Amino acid sequence: MAHDVTFHPSSLRADPAGFHLAAVPTDATPGWDGGKAAGVQALADLAPALMDLQERLYAERTRSVLLVLQGMDTSGKGGTLKHTVGLVDPQGVRITSFKAPTDEERAHDFLWRIERAAPEPGYVGVFDRSHYEDVLIGRVRSLAPPEEIDRRYAAINDFEARLTEQGTTVLKCMLHISAQEQRERLLARLDAPEKHWKFNPGDLDERAFWPAYQEAYEIAIERTSTEHAPWYVVPSDRKWYRNLAIGHLLHATLAGLDPQWPAADFDVDEQRRRLVSEKPLG
Amino acid sequence: MAHDVTFHPSSLRADPAGFHLAAVPTDATPGWDGGKAAGVQALADLAPALMDLQERLYAERTRSVLLVLQGMDTSGKGGTLKHTVGLVDPQGVRITSFKAPTDEERAHDFLWRIERAAPEPGYVGVFDRSHYEDVLIGRVRSLAPPEEIDRRYAAINDFEARLTEQGTTVLKCMLHISAQEQRERLLARLDAPEKHWKFNPGDLDERAFWPAYQEAYEIAIERTSTEHAPWYVVPSDRKWYRNLAIGHLLHATLAGLDPQWPAADFDVDEQRRRLVSEKPLG
Image (cartoon, rainbow over all chains, first blue to last red; front, side, top):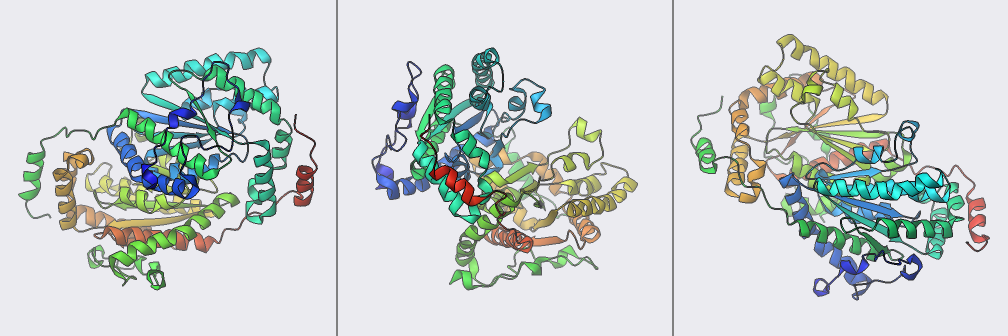
């Protein structure tokens, strides 16, 4: 049975000591030996438990989860939103997609727009791209002086520590694909008219910097993998595995919080009596 | 086959000429004679088409839909978010739950916080409660002088006309339940510890004003059912019917917009050549 296969998302956790991104395969399925069909079924089987945990978190209204999705173009951030985040109640989810900063955002510290999007208690916040862009494209394209880029890693760690102290559990996933896989996905977008809107010629300009981006990811993961906010590198050449792995990571994060249905802060019997003995309405 | 049963959501449209809310049954299933099991299946069958239309709207980024959900406590606004809105890609959905206004919100016109939550182009915005609270609880509980309440109906019509002109299609649904059904749902919340967090003793205080609320809804629907933003009164004693009906209303609204995948604004062949002939990366 698919759900008897044990999945260990902890094996995806990046070890910052001498982290080498190139050593992490993009097409493997670590922790899962059930194949695709069973993997798709296992995610569907996980959905009720994921929904239950998320609803308890929402009911509690004291803590929150922030899922950070980072990855190269076509790595599947949007697909993860649809297939994995889409499994829980949208009422308790806050998705923020970060684009190139506006003039107003650029006039502030790079974390200004990020802090404003942090999830309120009870919510699962999801960042589709994030503050990490400021040490990824920021570094690769020299959008800030080297000393400013350098300053940002510690600023990010401080920020995430603060989030954690305030009750937000930070779950950071890098969707790891190969350059060859990206090439195939970009060609697929060009081949399908209904996917043209997802394609931007600028994506190819960024692709030309592939090795520099991989290096920037490696440095970011090495310098911001902390006890309170570790990175998980998710092999993402296989979309079904990516969805399943992130589903399990989200599930493990919520289960770790063990949210509970809040106890009534009123006298249940008294309220029941009020209803049972009410006078005719109107 | 379930999906061969034709559903006509237009039959739920309120006719403002001499509108009588009490004449609308709460437990009927207008437009649907397939029963519950087939109704649940029909909503599942509708999901792919709903997702496709919503993704096209998102891709276009020119128009938007605003789904307004109003109804008495327990009428199923949250259930609609989970079971119907939850069928589409959460990336393209913006849900706003309106609570009692804050001091800052109260210091502004009642529409101030509403306008700020209007959906951007491409999005399906959903209001869980809305500006209508200001002519519902506002009227029933005399939260504003009668002449101010009176002013608001026209202000709402102007506001919704403006939204429509700017490309937002407004879909307003009243989730219509009977007082007896609310009583049973409130008792069910009291009987289940995992539902206690949804119960508030204040809900019973509001319930005591049931006839006044029904009158306030009737007046609101009569005065704000316009050509550009009609009201749909959805019999909601049966949860499966409510989910199915609102799913069909949302589908009909999106289908009416007939959103199209945007054409490429770049030379597809040129981009394909760039990819196929690229130099080794790095």
